[in-house]
Image 1 (cartoon, rainbow, N blue to C red):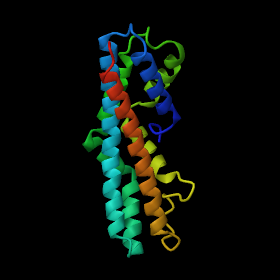
Image 2: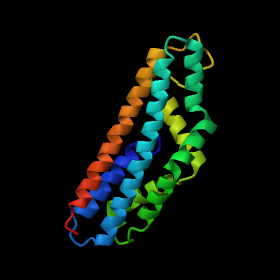
Image 3: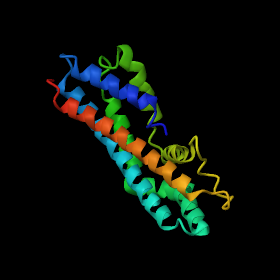
Image 4: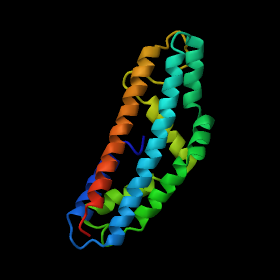
Length: 191
């Protein structure tokens, strides 16, 4: 998923380094950075809630392969994902995060952070279809199992699906925690 990769980690490190360690960063700049981070964390938190709801439904259907397969198909369905992301405000949060990052003064978007922050801005395009595509990729890409291969119900291993999805959700939660740590660091910033 585009928000859960090395780019976000690099951007978080760059923002922390640029805005916390430099004394001449304005309060407005720090405020924009905090708002952007809060919006990113909110969008990921909503995504985690959606996935945890799907995980709960899958756990209830473990004994019935047909019901399990149907629940998994629903969880990764493009239209269902898109509707959920729209209704929960995920895409709006991403758009606002992108706008806040754009508000950072050009002077701050220099040196090592410029390229990273600009890449993050371009990747957070805020359009529902792109975000949904990213969530589907997040759900489907796994070394152990391709979650989109639900057509072969007999080959479907419910335990492996549950383990994989649980692992993915934990990765998202760790990313949210990293963002929260950056927000706390920015809050304590002397600017």
